Structures are given as structure tokens and as C-alpha cells.
Image (cartoon, rainbow, N blue to C red):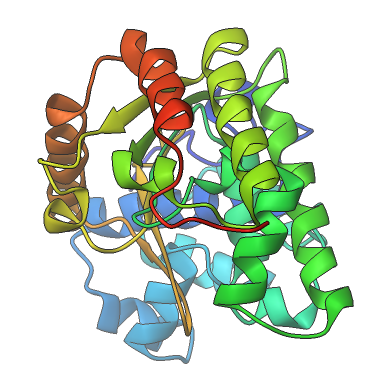
Length: 305
């Protein structure tokens, strides 16, 4: 028999009363995976116990789908969990994890699993992000975001505006007293790229400098001679959580969707990439000077905007 307190609610473990259901699904999935591994049971065996496949177990343990009470009961029995308090705790957590998420997005975003990402970003204790080619989203002004969105994902004006409004809501975490530690890396070349015209460009650079100085965010500039895209050509965000049940998560956002990575080898690779970017980047104390120099030098391509 396996004795465990993994199913009991504890706000310090990330499953307090205000936790987002998307985060709770990941916490519950991580706890079930730990029980399965401790019991020495394969994903295939667990799948058969709930009349499903190994892939269903993978989705449950990754927090990608909802949980049925009968599946939780069967899995706990399989894993040797007999304590009724523990079993009740798991079922209560599953009920809360199946609730509607706080972040509601339209079908366009849902297809890219943005609702899950937004909940995780909102619950993270640390957010580290690099976006080759553009200013990272958490630093974008509304006008800059609009200009970038009309190029990268053109569509009806209303769709673009909804994306911008959602981004502005996300940026509130920079001003939250209990917000995550935010660390952002920016290519030096991006500082000279005038999305939206000169006025939008200047306002955007001023905004980056202001955020770097007036919030707790760490902003570093990666010099041209380093070649940030040579280190990583794909935008990524590393999320860290206070909940001990959750490992770091890497979020990759690309043209056709999104991926969440949490396997040890994947995390090690992206931690290494992040470390190389930051080691080669200018110290945070030089960010304001580099931005000022970019404004004086002007954009790379003259614009009439």
C-alpha cells in the first residue's frame, strides 16, 4: 500500500482556493504520475485500468484534459492508495480542475491552447522569455503589438484588436504586487526595427526602458555580434512555479500552434539556451544606454510613418 498526502489541498503547493483550473489539472496530473512511477506501473498498464490508451494517460498526467471521477478511483486503486482522506482529496482536486478556466479566449486562440498558456503564465512564479525578431510580448505597447500582429497574423481588424486587448490584460502581471519575476531578452537588431512607423517605434523603445527601470522586470539586450537567432531561432518562454509538484515548463509558440515541453532533456536544452543568451547579453544596467543609443542612431530602414 502506498501512503500519500498528495491529494490534500494546500495553498502553498499551488492548489489553493484561487488557483486556476488549468494549473490544477497540471498539479493533479503531476501527482498521479508520481504515484504511478512510485508503484512501478507503466503507462500502458494504467491506460488499461481506465479502459483507455497509453496516450490518454500521457494527456492526463500532462494536465491536457479533464478528469473523470471513475478514472481517478481506478488509478488510485491500481497505485495502491487506500487512505480514504487521500482519495477524497484527489477527487476534490479533480472536481476543481474540471471547472471553467478563468482565461476565456476565442476559437482562434483556443486552437493554439492559449487558454492553458495564459493560466500558467498567470500562476507562474518566474517568466523568462526570448522572441527573436520582435520585442517580447510582455513589453509590447498596444500600437506596436497591433503593427506586429497585422504582419504576422493578418485578418479582420476586430480579430487583431482582440489579440492586442488580450495582450494588454496579460501585461498586468508586470504591475501585480504578487506577480512573477519577469526576465526578458531582446535582440539588439530589434531595437532598430520600426514596426508601425517612427512614432510607434520611439514610444516602444521608451516603454521598454521604462519597464526595465520602474518594475521588477529584468531586461537584457543581446548584441548583434552574438547573433541571438543563431543560439535559438524559435520564440520560447520558460515558466517556473512555486508548486513543488510542477517542474518548469517550456512554451513554444509557432505559426501553426503551440507546444508545452516538460521532459528533463527538453528543459535542460532550453535552460542551456537561456543561460547562453543571458551570459552573452549586456548586463541589465546597460539596457537604458543601449536603447538611448538606438534612438539616436535611428531605425535600420528609413520610414515615413
